[in-house]
View (cartoon, rainbow, N blue to C red):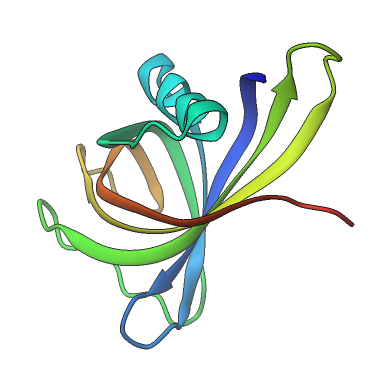
Length: 129
């Protein structure tokens, strides 16, 4: 069983063209961390996720967002999941589709709050290198 998530990020892709848009590194709210842990541990569906302090590193193909607009994308959500019994961090990635919108608008590639909804998880895997 996993009890903690560190270093979460999302690699975002355009859902229609599969074009890489960039990587967002962020912090999870306690409720979002619990929702992700419940998915990995028990397969409880995720209704929404809220990320805070999101730093986005765009690709050359990225177009800046329009405020208050919802975007439908696909991506790879990654994080280090800590195992309860051994305390070992395990890299896990989830291939997902989702709608997202900024809950705040700041200039540049930093967003103080982002919400994901309509999350569909295609796969969840431990990453082995």
